Image 1 (spheres, rainbow, N blue to C red):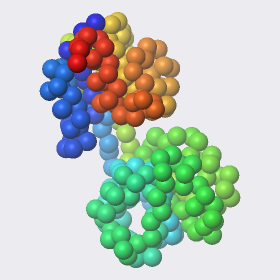
Image 2 (image 1 turned 180 degrees about the vertical axis):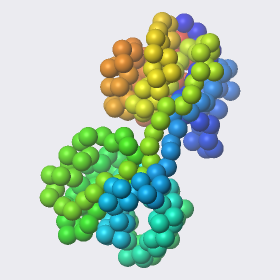
Image 3 (image 1 turned 90 degrees about the horizontal axis):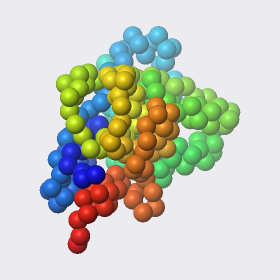
Image 4 (image 1 turned 180 degrees about the horizontal axis):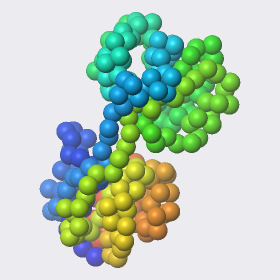
Length: 250
């Protein structure tokens, strides 16, 4: 089946989508961007109901850029001046780099993991006397609390934002050859909007194990699985798949 139209289930946003724009031009395919999920920030009262006091913690664990945004947003709204002594643990270098939006690196202590949450566990274990805060959304991998609980440390999770399904009713009659998903919430949104979704000849691409598992659980047939040693990025995997499907020779 020739690939003509692709839907990326995330919004078009700056440089992160540049590879797809380039792919669209080079392979002469239409690529649309549409956020399948919406993020709603928690209020100060929501945080207080969780019995969370930011001043009780000495280390903040960041596992996403959104958690960074909402931590500092709420710190400001709750009139909590983040102390210069606050330490930060970032799951990836990308998150650590993003943290510069709010802090000056030379004045703070930051530990950076490689990719997975497991990478930062040795640091947490070594600094077991610290008090750790984990800002997150209402959706969190169950293994993360499990790993922290095994370390016998003082830690709390603060739900600072919630993920909800977007209204996709305008896509009811849209026709795409490939649907691309990056997290389980996007898969959930598809079926929240279209409970009777029939995949038919539509190809499904997923990024990450959790997204893959969610898509399989929903009964979808997965045609493109990323990342792999050969294709660490979704754009690379799509390029290869389009080349094969459209039989373009170079």
